[in-house]
Amino acid sequence: MKYLILGGRGMLGTDLRALLRERDTVAPQSAELDIRDAAAVTAAATGMDVVINAAAYTHVDDAESHEDEARAVNALGAEHAARAAAEAGAAFVQVSTDYVFDGAGSEPYREDAPRHPLGAYGRTKAEGEERVLGAHPAPYIVRTAWLYGKAGRNFARTILTLAGQRDTVQVVNDQLGQPTWSADLASWILALVRAEAPAGIYHGTNAGSTTWFGFARALFENAGLDPERVEPTDSASMQRPAPRPAYSVLGHAAWTRAALDTPRPWRDALDQAFRKGVFDAELEALA
Image (tube, rainbow, N blue to C red; front, side, top):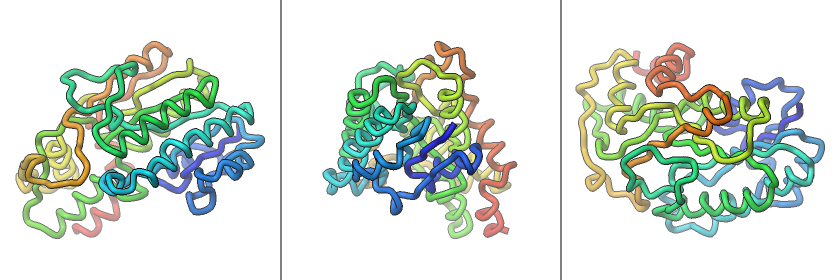
């Protein structure tokens, strides 16, 4: 099979490439293929069997004042990619986010739960989902959250860097979610495509839940550091332009319905990420 990975040099794109044979994969970075350019995306998708859209405007706070720019990528760009895949007769995977929900829930969000985004980023991603569903006859929409990995900036790498710069680190303890290893997400996406699973919405997050504070303490523990150096705070103390969902736990029933393995616990994934050297650069800096 021939794969086109849009956003192929980002965190998820890097892990997807690692799981695929290079000769069967085209994975341009955003500067090489701009998904806002419908004609360019259509040309790139020609002859492909699978198109995975991992490209996105992910600056959550900046999106509040640059919503048109975020929409051009997250909504219109997603539609371009989905339509290009449809015209090529290719399977299509759209990577989405927990930010399509408002975080007011108290039990894991079902895949069919109504979208109700709080801010600009979530609005553009929710619109992207709708446009994808209208542009491709049988798309996969895979929502993820709290993603970390070896490539690109992310919370986990930032916390480990701060551990070498500060005696203590304050982290919010009133937002609940699912830390998710990008390598796991990559494997789930490929499992969907290879199994020719039923089209629809899937939640691509590791199982279980914790707060950002709990996640940070786990990072310290895995790095051999004293977790007591991580101190709790609340969201009100961390002023941000964009609102964050307080509850971002996603349910995984669609995997069971598709007879596919459900995602493993987040702590098991984090332990393996450390063993696989995902954070070696940060750990070396701490030594």
